Image (cartoon, rainbow, N blue to C red; front, top):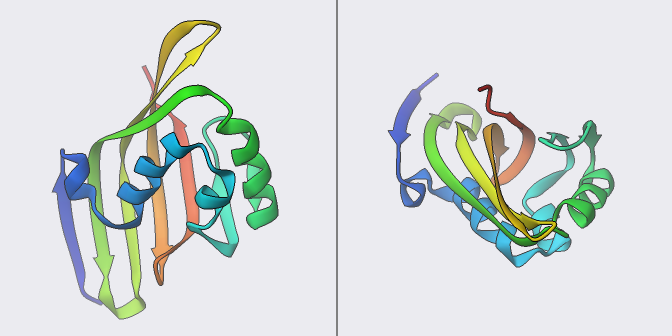
Length: 130
């Protein structure tokens, strides 16, 4: 198995599907966000319980994306490429920002994406420990 590790501190270098996912958050389109996931994907979301399959993931994004002025910025990314299995694993940090009750809010979180054939098969996101 060939494994290549690439670390980046620039969201443009995070590349691939993770960068597209983060940039698409601000469009607030549940259908677009769900399109990044495989049909039987698993999502352990920052603000929800375990989700499995596109129907549950779509429902999550319908509610998550209703935040005013929602944005996602990647602040750190490590990419593991496994060419033998057509799988890429992304680990990193991102910041969600939005307006809540008239006040600007930032939420710092960490992520892991497992991507196979350019679809997210597993996505874990959790609040960054203080």
